[in-house]
Amino acid sequence: MTRGFDDAEYAALLHAFPPRPIRDEAQLKATEARIEDLLSQLTRTGAEGELLDLLANLVHEWESEHEHIPPIGGAEVIRFLLEQRGLADRALTPVFGTASIISEVLARKRALQAKHIQKLADFFGVSPACFFPIVPDREADVA
Image (cartoon, rainbow, N blue to C red):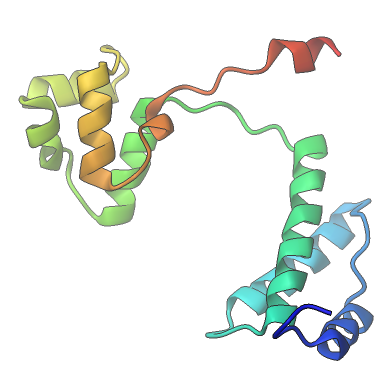
């Protein structure tokens, strides 16, 4: 028994929506709907948080086996972060120095430099790792 955790509540949640490995799109949609229900709550109990973690792991397993997520590069991440914050490209002038460099980076005509990556991380408040391209694990592809 975990302190502050209501085992009876957790058992009731599991009974109401028994988590199972996702085998098809219908199960995926149902699991995602339950996750959305849990996420829409302003506060969650410990039991609800545990169920949310469990369901998110089941969706992650499904997606890693069935969904191809293409790798994205720094330019796409920058565009996403700008859009999420409602910022124009010119907001990056303190990072890159000139509008032409901003344009070239976002058009993927110029690679990000280490100094830009650190400044971008500071500017957006994220890890510098966000701006490095994801390289597939060759050993995993061979296995």
